[in-house]
Amino acid sequence: ETGVTQTPRHLVMGMTNKKSLKCEQHLGHNAMYWYKQSAKKPLELMFVYSLEERVENNSVPSRFSPECPNSSHLFLHLHTLQPEDSALYLCASSQDLVDSYGYTFGSGTRLTVV
Amino acid sequence: AQSVTQLDSQVPVFEEAPVELRCNYSSSVSVYLFWYVQYPNQGLQLLLKYLSGSTLVKGINGFEAEFNKSQTSFHLRKPSVHISDTAEYFCAVSDKGGSEKLVFGKGTKLTVNP
Image (cartoon, rainbow over all chains, first blue to last red):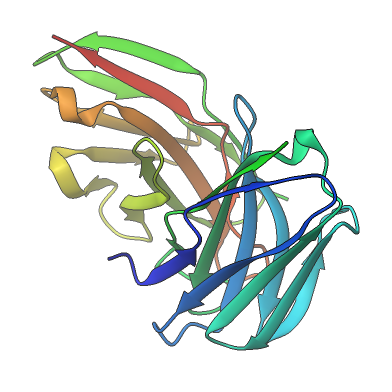
């Protein structure tokens, strides 16, 4: 148990589907992150939330839509995805944006777009 | 802004051999340094971190890393590896006291062969 829980662990979706990824942490952290990890590519930071406000959006296509309803939950809503969006999506949290303790990661959601 | 370079994308070694995974960083300010490990189909797990003080940092699973400010390096070492150490290892840096978030290297895939 890492302290950050992601569901589902695996997701297969068609290009016309709408689905959501969920991330939950009960560590009392104030910052949460979405990362994309594709094969043979470095980790890509997608979104950053601090105290439920989005503080960073790294040129992510609008087919990815994040939502942070409270400090414990983070969602990534997906619609009309492309096959190149297939990847491992990782959620992380930290006490604050600048945190000497580092980030706590979830186990990820393996997304396959068909 | 900080950046991290992991010089080796893949490192194959035999079981019980020593290993060193290299990491260099660039930053104009003082930094925190981290090593994370990712086992197959898992999220990232914190292995060790350097915040201040002693330049030799010990982490979990027998790993250690040495901070070298003059060479801007934070290489990860283990004197004798096991098959179970096969994983991907990520070096990361964050700006001390600033607003910069964690910046990750591209990762080094360590494969331990029998």
